[in-house]
Length: 325
Ligand code: ZN
Image (cartoon, rainbow, N blue to C red; front, side, top):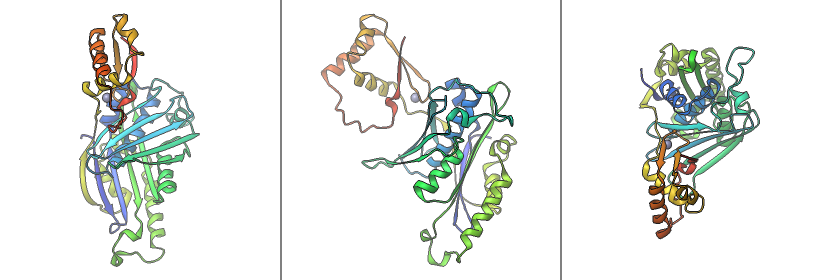
């Protein structure tokens, strides 16, 4: 089985169900970034959350999830597009914490339980749509559910899980988003009777509690469709399936623009010393090498034609970190 996401509805369209299997893409992130087991679980949950949010987008729209907690991971960024491409990083991804008393990985200890969850949707409009909410637990799923309730007023249940096996390999990862859609979005004929939403919500809550952690189900090869059925307590109406993969939007051309934007000054030393630089994309770990000669040519080009500076590219690739080669 490969990673994919199922979009479905239930209860005559009153419930939106998104379920994702993300085992391979989370393991890909772990290998790219050399993540500790705890960081794998934390970033894996954020990547899965971003994938679920990405499934609510269209066309070239993107969504970025930023978990800015006060824990030793130092912040997590995960983003996704409508085509199932997901990428992200943890600032201090090698940080490992001892497991909790119950034997589980201490994600909230690594993320921190104080801070903010920021959700930025770039819908292709002039300004991206941004919302934030205080972290309620640092476990990410509960924080995302709180974000939906508080910032977007949508009753939501979110489950995100990563099961890390011996040697750090990801044995199963996945997640779901269950949302009770507001009645006004439906035709009058489908309006539920008074109190029906409460009853529906209670039923869904029971199903969520009965399901428990999602990663063990995924590790046991239970499909997103089967999980959607368990969550609804009935057969879902499947609207679509979407393959998911870790994929970055960086490229040699974009990195060259970044070098040109950094400009002379900061990079002159690297040219003068004849050593060149290595730029590493934070999102995917891809390294771009520049010899002193190439760097000098890029910088000379930048001096002749300074970047226009309107920065409408705006997909966050400007987060490369520079380390001397
Ligand atoms: Zn990249």
